[in-house]
Amino acid sequence: MIGNSDTKAHFFKDVDGVLVFDSIKFGWTVTSREFLPDSYTRYKNKIGLVDRSGRSVAQCKDVCLVWPYKDCVLEGGQTKEDQKRDEIFYNETLAPDEVNRLLHPKVFTAAKRYTKDDDVNITEFNDRDNLIIKGNNLLVISSLLKRYEGLIKCIYIDVPYNTGNDSFGYNDRFNHSSWLTFIKNRLEIAYKLLRSDGTLAVSVDNYELAYMLVLLDEIFGKDNRKNIITVKRGSVTGAKVINPGVVNIVVIQQIIRFKFHHYQSK
Image 1 (tube, rainbow, N blue to C red):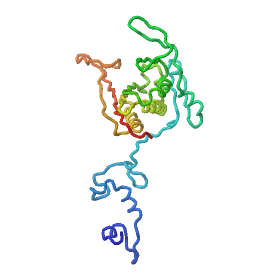
Image 2: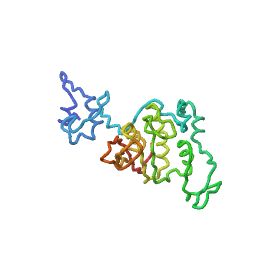
Image 3: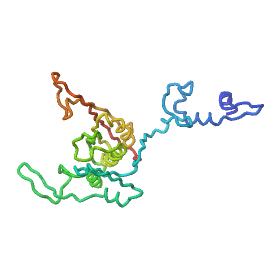
Image 4: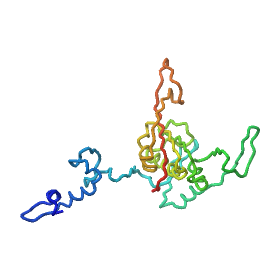
């Protein structure tokens, strides 16, 4: 480096006849080399966040949304009685037995096969059957994982909007940290269920849209995001054609679609 006039002038300083190497400037150059070739100054064509060391946060290439209970499992209540209860968090470190029992495959009961003529009780089903499963969605998808991991072509999730006004049977009054944990637990299993070219679609409103996007980026990868579809609704009761002669409350509903491509999971 001393033999090259450019690097010598840039990284060394003459102090009373002694060349002093600027290790900080050299370290920054090495860590920021991905945008140096077309830059004349440190921040040319760049805008973004830096940490206390002056390093670009974008260099990390990981999206990480941090909140309390992030590493916990939230079962989530799904009955009217559950809406009055305190949600139960199962921590994988402090309560491994509870987590294992919660997510271990369960036995499905009261199975029926419906035909155009009748419905009959059955004791088994095959992969050609179309299944309607009633129950806590975390327990159900955990039970499906062993048999269908990596085989599902499309998953659609209509999440609780966390507004306190949802008509879902489960508790829709989570605090923000609880809501994030609730969604994260289910998305992580959905990731495992999808096959290499599968698609995940998530319905959510503008209230939690930003947090949902960051969460999906973290689990599925930002490069796998395909598009966002916005649907106008004439009233809170559902999508419909808006009558121009009537004053309507317009609610914006966001549907997020992620295209899943095969890559090494975290």
